Amino acid sequence: MEIGRPSSPFLGLGSFIFLVLMVLHLQTSYAEQPDDHLCPASSCGNIPNISYPFRLQTDPPNCGKKRYKLSCENNNRSTVLNLYSGKYHVHAINYNNYTIRLADFNIDKANCSAVPPYSLSIYNFTYKDPYLTSMDTDSESYSLSEDLTFVKCENSVESPLYIRTDPCINSSGAASTTLSREEYYSYVKVGGTYTSELEDSCRIELMVMITSRLQRIWENRSTNISYKNIHNQLVYGFELSWSSSFTEDHIVDCCYGRPDWSTSIPTIAQICREDPLSSLNILIYYYYPRKKQFSQTA
Image (tube, rainbow, N blue to C red):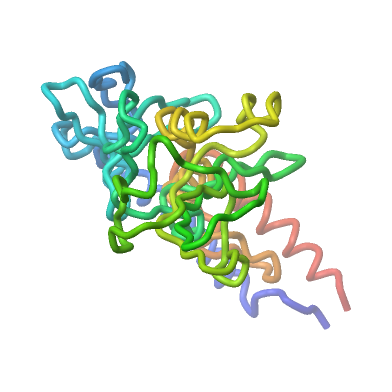
């Protein structure tokens, strides 16, 4: 008895012909759609090459991806990304490693007392977001950015993990955002901080992001870190990756899902619309060897 073979050769051939026609239909439909990869690059401020997957608000509708939309402000001098509740300067876009470097719009290089008005933490990001805080390679996964926690304490804290913010932010409450303007001791702590990990009498005021420890060369070379170092890091900004989301988008654009290798007849999930000849090769190679293999099994 033959297992897995279609009950009629005409039924199997009919299924195959149907799938071939579906490939050609998908390819034709895709060719008629505007190609968001082929738009000319835009520019704004210090970002001269804004191209796929990014787009400016003023770009044609078919250019780039909507979820990678940027805006050009300040008389075309500032490239801006609105992310969650915050507004961020785009300092750099690296198309070689799929990263974008951002800094909070409210950070002023000449004023170290300025702090972001909203929290942004690595915990805000999920795998479904356009941007991620880590980068995956063939051999490892590493963080691009990490949290910086602003802490206010009623009592002085003696710990190398807590960096005093004075004279930039002192007990006058100059940079107060969520706590009342009363006498306090202000610190920053590099890395995420849970409430249970805080020193007694301390409260978390704000969590923002800076580049990861591996990229903060100044920290690796110095044991005497001041808040001015931290402020310079806020001015420099933090990096996010769009590699995973962009790759995911590209796969979805190319194929409708993953192959189902458990059956002898190809499914629609195996049909790619990027190259009809390759798609036909997949169908021919996949269907007939598998059919032969199953038909020889008794």
